[in-house]
Image (cartoon, rainbow over all chains, first blue to last red):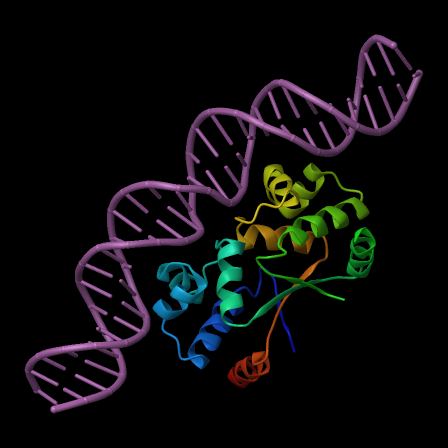
Length: 86
Length: 86
DNA sequence: CCCTTATTACCGCCATACCGGTAATAAATT
DNA sequence: AATTTATTACCGGTATGGCGGTAATAAGGG
């Protein structure tokens, strides 16, 4: 169900944000306010801009209740070693 | 199993990259070459820098066989409407 | 229709992300 | 343990990300 993001299909990020923003009934200015970013960057991302800062993107995604996940074959090993630290 | 990333636990991104890089037996310069980025940005990310470009981050993650996923309550609706386009 | 209000599109400026170069440190080999 | 080799840490310069301001366009009300 989750959407995989890489440098080939990055255009989906903008589409996902646009879709969620419209579903939430928000204008770009509304979303910019909530996410604590400028309106321009939302315009840019929705138009496929790839050179956006990860922090900016996370602010926007989190405001729209979208979760970013990292996964891979050995991610389990990482979480286990991290859990061992606490 | 996948690790959730947001602006509160962003430090994990650097740790995940460091963990995977070491497991792959790569120096920062090695990884930089493969990912097509400078060595400095890998140093920065592993030290918790949050203001990195998403494109740069994806290049590094993909080089380490780490997948980025976006998910949320209404993501299914998005994929359905996207599928309908094709 | 016209006028008002809301939303989107674009421009120029400033702060900074990313780069290569080099110094510092660690690891390895004899 | 001294020299070589590999890796990490840091610095300064430059390209550009993200900002507010404003123009253009769309939506809605009387």
